[in-house]
Amino acid sequence: MSELKIITNNPLVKEELVRQANRPDKVEEIIFVDCDYMGVLEKVRDLVHTGYEILTHPLYGSVKPNETPYRTIFIKEGKGLNVESLTLIEGAIQTVQKFQLNYKTPVWDEKVTNDFQVVDLDLIVNTLNEIQFL
Image (cartoon, rainbow, N blue to C red; front, top):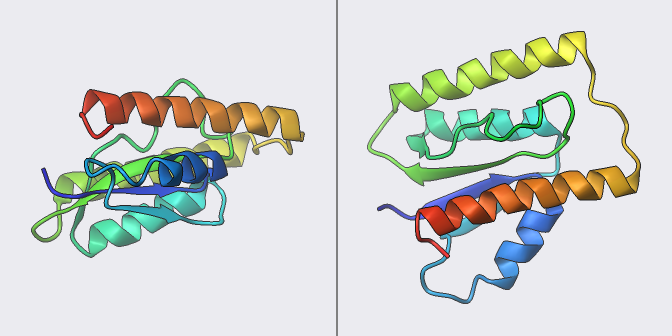
């Protein structure tokens, strides 16, 4: 498998995976973007346009995109434009736009945002374990 890259706006994901980064079977790069949920999708879309492939669904988990401010996505370097990844990320962007139009993400207090960070981290760690990167 090509080297895994993680795109995230979740400070807890960044902190935890950087802490574990000394292991040789780890992620090649963690790209932390200081933005909202949509910003993560747009960053991934931009990378897909440069030849990356999406490994995790941009809308995974049971938390609606208008409820959580955090998103983490796995990608890997591909061999040119991957149409499936492009279709997937464009569809996710449209879905989030629709959710945001109808129901804006609330301004959560710190306890709630911390909970959303933990949920996102848990999903990511479980996914990494499944694909044997951790």
